[in-house]
Amino acid sequence: MNTNLLNHDAAQLTAFFAGIGEKPFRAKQLLRWMHQYGEADFSKMSDLAKSLREKLATCASIEVPAVTSDATAADGTRKWLIDVGNGNAVESVFIPEPNRGTLCVSSQAGCALDCKFCSTGKQGFNRNLSTAEIIGQLWIANKALGATPKGERIVSNVVMMGMGEPLANFDNVVAALRLMLDDHAYGLSRRRVTVSTSGIVPAMDRLRDACPVALAVSLHAPNDALRDVLVPINRKYPLAELLAACTRYLDKAPRDFITFEYVMLDGVNDSAEHARQLLALVRDLPCKFNLIPFNPFPKSGFKRSPGETIRRFAETLISAGLVVTTRRTRGDDIDAACGQLAGRVDDKTRRTRPAVEIQTC
Ligand code: SAH
Ligand code: SF4
Image 1 (cartoon, helix red, strand yellow):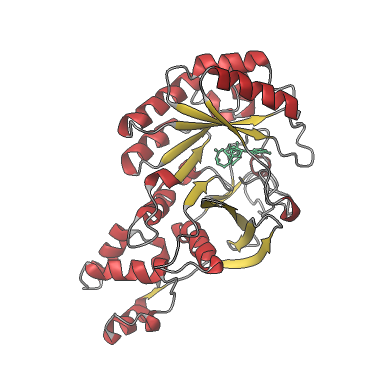
Image 2 (cartoon, protein in one colour):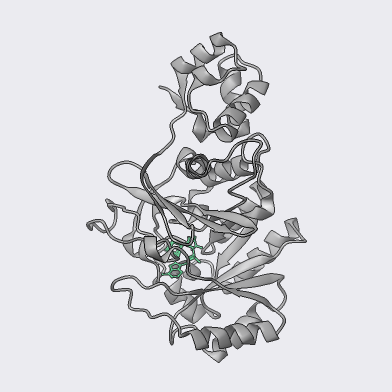
């Protein structure tokens, strides 16, 4: 069977070439062609010997996932719907800003973790994305945005904040992260690549050892009683363990900080007392807070906190010396804002439903 080379990071590609009797430097050449030139046709790879190009065509392929829609909002936010087979689709979103361009990438079709305010969670788990489907989102964005190897870097930052829990698809996500950082592929600095997790503690430790990129943790509650309800993985890895894992993560990268994401749910987690509990919780940890106004979806059962409540909550954290940002809504007119991304997953595992809205970043 043909091997899809888009599934391989540098080490895996080197092993592939060794397996077909070729030298290791071929892996670097292939990485550059695939990821810097966006080339998927072996016959166009002009610095490979003709015999090698022919050999590759018989045993390998470069299969980029198919894009089923491409929409640009008035503010420049751009969204691609990516077909992942069997009627399922995930989304990636490019958010241009004056001094950077951020791509929000999905890691799974659906999610098993069932956070109560998340429409992906409500939908259940379908399957893990392959490395090709994860890195393919960056490949597609670069191609669509006209990136060239020598030109300006258009996607300067990647956040794994799309659909799914990245650390529940560990191996495929880590191979994709390595490609993002590899100088022969996308060459992004590790501080510009962020994994967002709901807090799978053992996988946080593994990520620290395998590929310590920037880490965002979806906190959403300042005590175990509330977090057990909102983020059910907390019953397995409660706050004390989660915070200890954050500290261990920073041991490896001492100049870094953890970004805590906190969705603002009206009357649920947004009181002055919640803010005080949060301050006590993170007292000893280098961290920043990202407050996310809840983005509603049908039958969620939650409301977004009023702007004034969010402002006061932020103020309490800021006056204690924390750095706090409140996420702005982007791409409203193409439903690309946080919580409004609408991929499709036909859930064949836990709950059978027709296509529904899913939560991504
Ligand atoms: N599974 C990972 C990453 C994907 S979700 C995680 O949970 O961290 C990216 C962020 O969006 C997470 O912080 C998630 O909690 C948040 N989120 C989920 N549903 C949301 C909603 N309806 N409104 C606002 N943010 C939401
Ligand atoms: Fe999964 Fe993240 Fe949604 Fe929780 S918030 S259900 S971990 S995608």
